[in-house]
Amino acid sequence: MTKATVLSTSHATTDDDTTFTSDIQHDVVTVPIDPNMGLYLQGTSGNDAIWGTSGDDGIYGLAGDDFLHGGAGNDTIDGGDGNDILDGGLGADHLIGGAGIDTASYANATSAVWADLSYGGLSGEAQGDTYSGIENLTGSSHDDTLFGDAGNNVIDGGAGADWIVAGAGNDTVLGGAGNDTLSGGDGNDTLLGGAGDDILKGDNGNDTLDGGAGNNSLIGGAGSDIFVLTKGSGAVTTVSDFEFNIDKVDLHGFTAADLGNDGELAHGYFSVDSHGDQWLNWPGSNFDASDSLFYRDDTHQLIQVDHSQSNLYNSVAHGTVIATFANDAHIHTFDLLFT
Image (cartoon, rainbow, N blue to C red; front, top):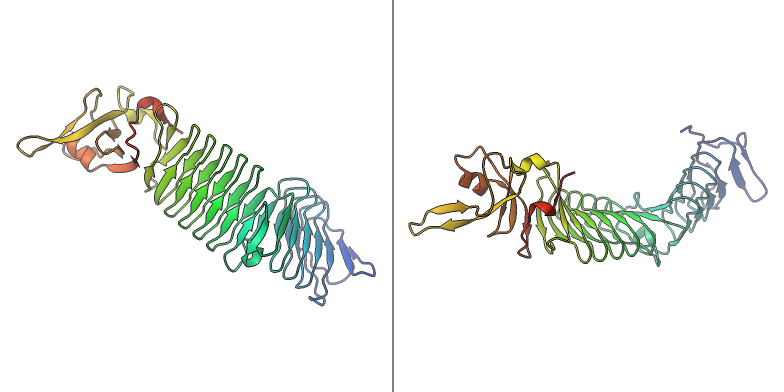
């Protein structure tokens, strides 16, 4: 991107209303005049970056994938064609996406925001903002409250402990860092918790839930859901409502070879005999050193076994718990996916 700072009209046109139109494509445009007067700033057919003033600005991106920042003031920002990022800054701003897939961004906000694509901004730097033709929403690095609309949204909470509700549509929701609560609403949604101890609720639809790192709780809700468990993530996941023969468990990073020589998920339970000795039982399944995964029927835990231990009992007892299935679910080979 070429940087152009408009210090004169050598690359801009102006009229009596102090309207600047840059004729350089791929511009970064700043205007060093009275910052309180408000301006009309227009981009080009390229990918522009335009910053407004502390006044009430009108900013129009035209074509291209533009970044438009209103600064302070009650601004009207229109992305035009292209996939644009609109950041109103301070003030009650009107964000108009235009054609393309456009994002209302609060990534630069200095405090938490409450933004709703259906009803507008309700607090923080989003207070008083309105949205038209906006598909996606990006929060701040603070504890945000973000709501989608009936369309297909991408909502990114960023850092902070965020509460995100996607609404209708086939949405992608990213919690980012922090302890987030994500709800998919209606539609077939993808929920990605990121770092932190997250709660993911698929609600209605056929959803994919991936808690990421941390101690996560996954609640699929209605529909045929996929619960993603990633090898080596360090996550301790609780799956609340796995439905046998309806939902799937995606063992990301594992392969079918981890099921051992027979290609079936080994399962069994611990028991204590009359002498007080503990035993590992695996009736109805084969379990040996070729198996990397074991499902404990008594605790409803999926375990990555540790074959560095002295025997099979210890390999399970000292293995890594990948997930606990809280509704007493029983996981079978046909419930598994490997990606």
